[in-house]
Amino acid sequence: MRQFMALGFALAVLINSGAAWAQGAPETITVGTFGQGIGPWCFYVAQDRGFFDQAGVKVTNRITLYGDAPIISALVSRQVDVVFGGTGTLVPQANGQTDQIVVVGGGEGYPVSLVAPDSITSPAQLVGKTIDMPDKSSSLTIIGTKQVDALVGKGKWNPIYSGGANAAHFALIAGGQVQAVLVNDPVTLPPDQHLHILARLNAGQAYNNGPILTTKAFLHDKPQAAIRFLAGIAAGCNFILNPKNRTAAIDILAKDSEVDRDSCALAYDFYVTGPQRGRTPPADARLDRKAYAAAVQLLKEAGTITNTSWDPMSVVDESYLDQALKIARNLH
Image 1 (spheres, rainbow, N blue to C red):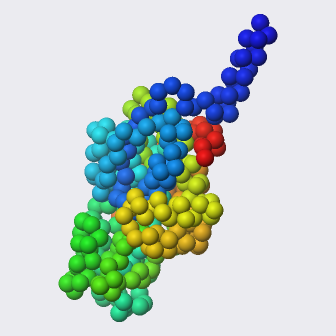
Image 2: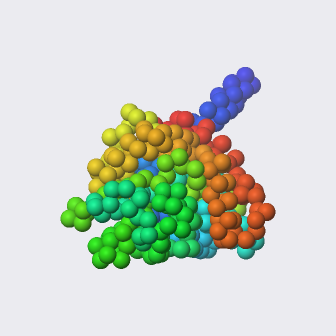
Image 3: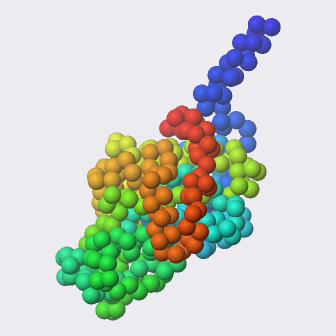
């Protein structure tokens, strides 16, 4: 009897310590990421360092999505189980068109930079000029506009809106159609086009545009997959935040984002160990609730969220992340 009691106590300690997560067949999950910049950095690291494998979860498919509408569609249709998306993904939830979307954690805040020709050395030179912004319907554009207004002056610049890869945006500068473009960090700047980063616009990270989102249906059907996945993501974020891992984190970002390594290094030194230290990426993959609420407020002010009384915290559930962190502590 004492042997059975001792065995039961040992198993309880093992489970509570988070060391028994990977027993049996791994859970499976499909993932969507917004673009290929810094946004999915914690995900890149979790894959590369084997954190998902250690946590007992397998990513069976990952697709790259551009824009809030495709992200919403992929989530609700169950094309993907989890996405690293924009705050605009929550618009249908806020406006009463669905009740399925859940915020389970925080990813990167989608840092962006304003890129201009070398001849433009000051934001003052963009007064009266045209700036290329992302697709008009995205939350990134609404948040970016607020930041450009602060830099150049509200009503003192002219926007145009376009999608596509960076090359398409840079071509607009080369053709004289715009004088600057808003792009995700990090970015490879073609040396023959004589472009430079005029300003990094997420100084302060006042607006979080990188929640990790899933659906109530997925959480109901596969709660362990959600927990184990979040454990890998949290471990990935914390790996990046450790300055000892600078070289490895930069190498992984350069490989998976296909951005040149020097640009990735500059982004690391600005966001991770520089002015934004501790916010990009978020420690433990925690959502920055204050910055997230500020981003939602901008969507309300822009009229994108029409239900002005909607509480953005009503869709946040970090209980799965709370459980995941018990596992994440044991990943290495």
